[in-house]
Length: 443
Image (cartoon, rainbow, N blue to C red; front, side, top):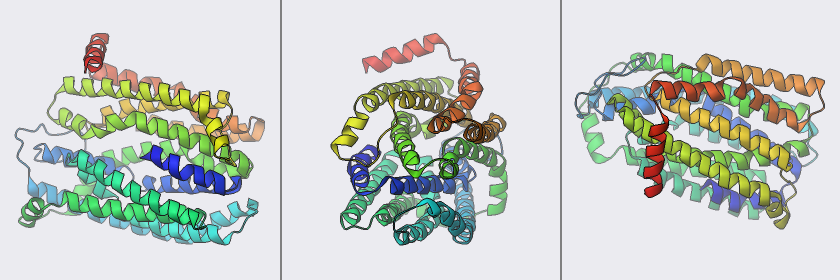
């Protein structure tokens, strides 16, 4: 659906929008990523613990897990967890709303100092975006708990339908001439549909009836139990933001908006390849957590190896198509913005693949309710930002600084250390890989 969105929405925006407006949307996209940081890793923790409860766990732990002795669901524990989720995201949404509407206008004013177009639509889009992101945060848990329960197919159906709504709404408004406002209104409309359907799917008649009979424990105690590991995951998320998104907030002060636009569109397309490559694994992530709580190591191995196979396949195919035909397609649709040159794209693809592989291994490690590399993650995030600022200040590499600052820092430690640690932890050998690959090819 992200590819469909690109095939439908992106050509229209590239045709209608000047490069400056494409760059502004890239900055808006970075802001959207910031909202996910306010989750502080709790969505991952909540989803994993929902899976534990539905797998038969009778208690929640700050680290590790209690091995399930039965598959019977403890609805009292489930109700306590759901109440904690609701109250946590309500508080997070309120904090974000205050920060956005008080501090956001000052940042946008400084960015628009370099903008030569009509600023009024940008301001309107900005405030709609603030409302949309506040709503998104308040309802952030709905898809999380749906996947945690194991209703992956229903979650994907909801996502596909809501994405269709978003695409249709965005395209109609774009063709009506609403510009960048179309993108944020489409985002809001898609989120409303997504959250409404996800909520209804999780709270079916039986679940409502069983939960109504239970008494929830103190939600603050539940949050405190989950907080240690959740905050570590939050640190990892912050590091990911510093490496991959903060650059788009910094670069307006060093590069022109047209340069940012070229980098932004290249990054978006490579991000689609990475997301598709990881999609298979994260579709079955709740299964990985279930294998962990039931101590089925062979199942963990199979999912991890298959996840790598899918990741490699998508990067080989998607990367080749992007390098060979990317700019040709943009010329065909008369785009005002183009991809970076093939050398830069190749570097971005390589670094993105290595980081995606690291993410896959890290996710498998965290499925046992531990976050082993959070210190190294935050150090790498800070170092990548510092290296970027140093490159901007003391070199004339320009856009290449954006690519190298993150890639070199990740390759220095995390990109090789995390997969190696997982391989040792689950005793992954070449015979496991051969067996899974052979079975995979036969199927």
